[in-house]
Image (cartoon, rainbow, N blue to C red):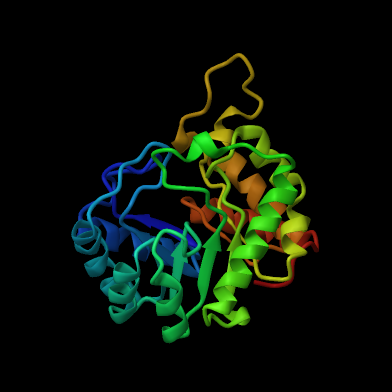
Length: 265
């Protein structure tokens, strides 16, 4: 899943693809590099980010979704049912909601009605205050319990179980040690019995690894360490990885396949 951020303020590449023509060109390149899905989002969810209006989010994503959907499979990265509905009408094939349907009470009904796949991430609140909620007794057990409860609620709302994908939410209401523990025990998330999307790409905790007492890697310098987590996710059996650098991810998956940890892509 290649990231197409149509935002001015995303933590890694905010502003780089803000103009529709730039986002379309970037999406085409990611497809050429081997992306299976393009994930188009118009709202930054970095820690502390403020939300755009729905009208602004629609203005950002719709022309990009419409253009890229002619070329390949597109997901819309949104917490708003209105944006999701418009993006599906424009050609998107799945919805990736970092709130797992919690931010908008109409989201689950929309997805159920449309019958599209739905990525539900572990979420404890909007970006502006989410890191204040990074408190766990056992991060893996707590995240798995909350994901299980969310999946059950989404099924009860009418979304078919075979349409659900879970995301443990690396970097969302989690400190560095929480993220590492989730990665170490990713099998526990997979044991929930649903496909799992892993989204570690360029996250802050990867900038810090091995850098104790030294300056952390900048976001654009985290693609090698991201690729290592991609290979780890493949070995664990993840359904997909959401990445900024598709070339590095494909290389990591090719190595994992050659070593026999994953089936042919």
